[in-house]
Image (cartoon, rainbow, N blue to C red; front, side, top):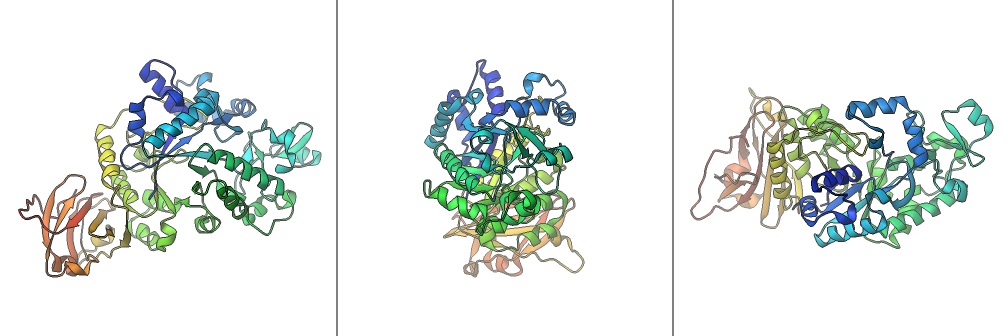
Length: 498
């Protein structure tokens, strides 16, 4: 299973420069820092924002008062030097000199590889910067308009190099002012995309594709049918991904995906797609809603990316108060599929920083949360192997709090794990019948993976009526199951909350 750690590269390097009292670029990151990043339980690092940012896009951003207001809200002592421009307004897929250039990026990849960790980089398939070389060298890759389009809708079109181009957008929101729209139906773009992704594959082990669903035939036609021409018979990703894999068979493709299009994108070649529906249910809904989502086919679930935050979402510490974050984190860490953690999440940061900024505000360091995440990420590394199964939760006629419980198991040979979470703000009780019939007639020892506490239960009880749990609000059990030790030492009852 893939566990990804996202880093805002420019912000991170700036803070390392302050920490070490000297400029630090990717090629100069100390080994002890790479050890911190490549912690046990993390096997891929996504360095967000390494490519050349657009000076033209930056000028547009600096003239946008709405953007500037959002910058000041996140960073009250904002200075012009803090505004680096958007990492998704790419001028060229070459590592920016400010982060160390191609040489520094190559050194970072080598340092991660030496620690058994893969490198993931961004690809923005939907749009490019207004000063991207393709506007002059490969205009057939872009959606073009006319002078009449520009006069009619100046917010949706721009003029560059004597041509009128459409500004980038998705079908539900106004155009983005700082980018130019690529044409997913263009044969020239598809060829160029294969070339670009192959070049990224020369520099990384995986690629995170921004807003990947925008290039799908149905979505693109809905947005651009009047200007893009006729849709090809083959979808964009179905064409592009196999051709890139001819050069890089093991390149990991991760899709930022919304609108319930994850399954379709998986069928078009993506290894993993964002699970935004799980995120929304963990943040805004209850255990029954989460459980319903987890009833989907296992083949589909194994190719989702579970997360509680990323650079586009509010910080988990702000969005998930009162113990909910830790309960949700246990869920995310122990479900099938990839996991995405975000730099700053483990420390309890609460300010979501606009990606345009190269500096973030000082915030309190949550030592207890940091310790929790450190233990969770390490302890769950072996858990998510083998066979996963959603478990039923039963209760009593006069107590329906079992509906607030989420439970599942993992098994790989003799390694067995049980996860039970009270995903509610009230105490919950229930029984969890375990799935292993060979427990019959023998006792078993259950051990908490985060705290080492252990207790014994008879296998017949674990099978029917099931493991009894009584958990406080937003509490959990994260347990390994094994035959009892010869001289067992039990420290507490299983109904005690973790």
